[in-house]
Image (cartoon, rainbow, N blue to C red; front, side, top):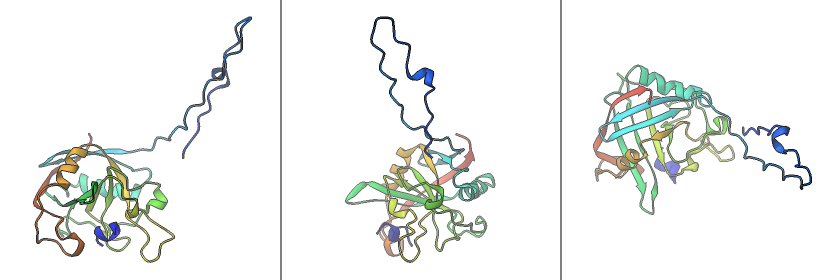
Length: 220
């Protein structure tokens, strides 16, 4: 249902042997081995981007290493100031699960802003997922994503690629996460809606008024 609503490694760093045990004091019992720590997550390169909106500021970390095509595309829009003056036009949470939802914004097919679509980077390739604060690209057919994007509230892993599914099973391309400003995201999602705007599943999800993206810039 959620797909329809959108319209449409671990690395273990061993503790050095010298750190695992200490010499036993004379006449005493040997010390217990040092407990093993948790696996260490690798550090992937990200680039910060700040969206200043009329509702507040949202800061993002774009996954330029794990999702280079999609993150690079978004940075093109940022660097060319193509997102300045665009809006968040859609937002919702589910009535039965108000902790889950999304907001969507971007260029809305404006020919003066839109760049050529990009190759699709499925989550099955990047290892990313639609969890709380994930930013992902809106699209029609795979390879059509350009300047529209959405930010997840809660978890919507049903939007991830599912190679076992039939039909279009490529999901949507996650390319970063919100690092601050989720309160702003949630406020936008629950803002006033038009009762008539929107088509199909999007009816009742269109923001009225929309929320302006004043600027989008690299940095936090």
